Length: 361
Image (tube, rainbow, N blue to C red):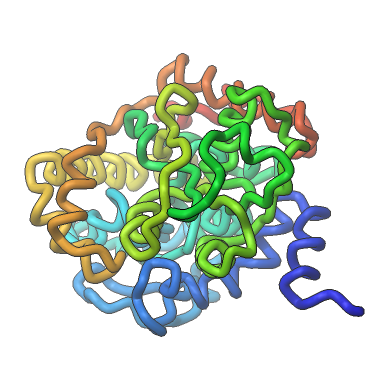
């Protein structure tokens, strides 16, 4: 009997590098991402829209006039996701106002996850964006011309391994031989590696099922996988909707930092714009720290979480944006790279320090 389309997809994903897998799943995952966060049937394909527009209409991610020459144009292209500081930066419009006064506009391009965002940076479609700690490691290994611009503090409870509320799985050690869904090359990939290691298991002891958030949520609810490794806000949405249990979060295992990455050509040709983006990001991050409820009100309709719950999440996270990236953070990123290389999931060795600093002005 022939395999199902989903089984064929999973089998193919095992043979792909994270970057190749991202290329094969970006469109499909973006088209159904809204399902994963409880937003009904409204699609959230990568889209470009103005900061003042609260809706997120579908459109081509990047226009042909800027896709290959963004660093030399009067457009700054920023990749963002439906959660976090860059989303708030877009919603408040302060960066747009600042750059407009300098004759520059901002093109906001939405992505379902960090690997997809950095694939766009790799192809020259994005100048700047934010991801978790693992995507830039894989992107660097794939040859993406990225530089680390800044980082947020650790947020280890912002990602976790989930199991169904009635699952017999009680500890990470119980995952041996089980199917575990995750977004390949995302921040939670390293959480899974570390959690297994901490429990005395090898990565080969489990059956990884590489799926983007929407497909992973569907498989998790159907019971097609035994566990799901996922980040906020999908984490909280899934817990509230399904009663899923947290088997293990990142506490004591991973830092789970958010990084701000910039395309090297853009950093070299437009350092003043890069600095403007970082400064405005720092400002909105500080604003969110003291205005959790207002920030939650902005994010709530987009991520499908009620304001009260989202306020609680935002009040519990760490704030602050560090620039430049400190040596200890670079060392931590190198450990991630070395871990994936040892697992033969990274195609070649990389030196994170080579891309850890912006060029001096």
